[in-house]
Image 1 (cartoon, one colour):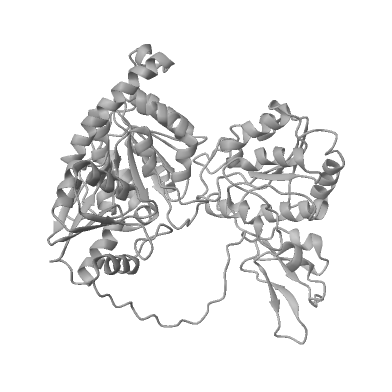
Image 2 (cartoon, helix red, strand yellow):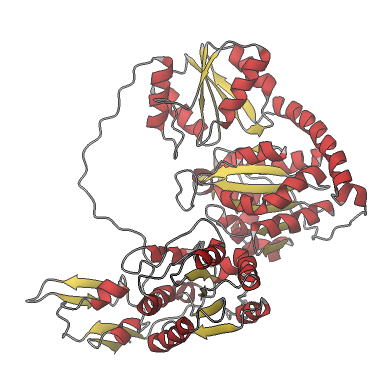
Length: 620
């Protein structure tokens, strides 16, 4: 039995925040789950996929977040409780469906888990999802701990079903990826995921006339949701005194720590918002009247602060309110107890002794790097050998984005999933330089196909390199439409990238194994020679992710490579052009030489194809 299907015992269970969400959803009777993996939310769909056969629920890795919302809402409209999960930028992809779904509503509970990423641990921006709740007019809950995440996902299903609307569960990286004690309940008996659909086109088909009617219904629903928020036990206050702090999410933990360590329990009251949209105006107003000054502590944007100020203005409350500002709560990155203590000290004029920081020795930098034997490195090497520095290299979201680093330097522009393809068309139209775009296999299915069709339709002239390593590598080796793992560990193709590309109208399509360096460069030379004649052309660079082979397929290496002793580090070609992490400069002998760490080498052979001093070595 999967650990998340365990029966409740007498002791709390130590769960990851994402695991707590899974368990809570199971107890709430979820029967349909869909997601596109995105850190820090990826473990949610992974755990659901692992336990789905035992639990009798339907799960899918959707091709992107928009699709995950659409399939999940269809289930909820059919009376089946559903959940979809994504990271914050994924909600941008899903926004078209999400905004209108907020009008249409649902029949059974539907929860959308959105994981924000303050400090950009694994993201391209610090977007604050809370504004989406306000924009769409849907309820939103914000947990601070795994225990709250567990309880709130159960409550989110109840709110969703009661008010016939999707409900957002907004987490952040520190909630998703921390572990904490969770007191679990029981999972209901298996029900399967069969639903029923009642035709009602004049409420479910959103033509303008229907949309106008549903808009009025949505506004009435918001009034009822605000009343629900005002009375929700997820919003509560603690402490006493004339000074107040309003907070939500993980910021509450920093506030609680700061108040306790500064000895302010008798001076500071804390209002913690768990049901944070619609904001509980009556509760906030009551709290503001009970204090002389109120500090709003939250990460990223002043979402709660703006609501508190509006509440004060609407209700004629004169309490001084502050939040974001110089010397107060920073708008950028994550909060921590010191930042919160500093803001409390400044705003409430309470002395605070900055902690003494002991100067630590400077650690050597260890930037992220493509793994030893990564086929993307071989692809970048060959492309740079053929196209050089004069080409423009739009790239995309994935582990291959690390091609930005030297010595590869094969990334010139990136804004979002799929942008590598579309921006390549723009660059090729206005620039004389050759344009070579990169996109991974999973990202291509997610957001690259429309850009490719656009390129064909508008005769854009660039080379698109699809880096096909057979998995969604960056987020933990999840499947995508191009691959499917069988229980026996075999990979069976689902959708052929080559057939799909040709179906989009691309006439010049080549497939290479990038670990075969000379063959790859020969094909690239031919593609370069024809770039001005053929419009868009596509190179599929196909070779499995070595970590995926080791982790999932249990493939073991039989050969490694080593220097034969003739290397004297005078050419440095392997370091300057390839830069595999298995390489190191050895200065212990009479002459400097490049050595290969046999523990890191996976035997891809790329280095031996560019340097005669590198030879294979069979290992037992």
